[in-house]
Length: 390
Picture: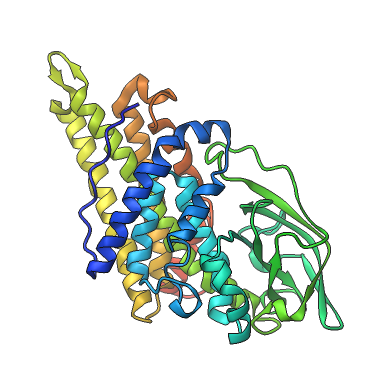
């Protein structure tokens, strides 16, 4: 494994402040995240202290209002921060994206009283969040969820099971989507549930192909009582809140995917320049040169796509179709680039002595989370041709 630090990406950032911010992120990544990534992923250790450090540095609330402790950064900047963090360690980059997703409902749909009471700690007080939409029998078809919230005076009682929850069991708060009415999307409401709520338990984390340092677990709600003051938005508005969060979250996944791909390209290029065969660096051979060129092109195209979608969001324009395109293209690109990186390293690429095999395993999950890439194609097609007529 190389100890050589990757060359910084030549980024087009809107302000001097954002350039300083990215420099800080690179410094933290190089000093605190990258050196321990391989060892801690191998052992399955969750780096909670890193998230505490990021919170103290103001990096867990970047796209949110300053009045509640956020960084007031445009998505154009926030996503490039995610890319840098994911390039150092996907568990961290994706973790920050999930935390931001968990804050999205309250920041966008909560009352001023709710926002004042909870957002400062959520955005910069050292807390870590998780997002609870999927269930064992409700993944892509999220509108069919069965976790119920029943009104009991001024409280709600939540019962059911959520699945595939990143930070499940270690988060301090959960944004939970539960059924409060009839079947279908109009019967779903959002709630802010404390991580230590009575009746809330986490199952043993899933044993995964990659991202072993990031706990993914089922959560069981056994009569969890939540005051109505922790309901986010109106009754029945939960699915709308969830979809809005997912549009933004898909951009986070796209940025993380490009970070993973960039890390793989950096490793492959370093190896190709150092490794000699037949008296020459293998980077001299046309077959590998073309492979590296294709890898770099996919990364640049993906970065341009997610930034274009982010700029639409920052301008207040619709971006759902572009978010789906970015998530689709960038995660497919990450899978392709990491696979090629393993090929560039040959037999060494297949060993745990070099990080590209880990990056390849991690890239796979990005094609699945926050809407599989098959779902992204459905979203894009609906924007182009309208709903299916069958």
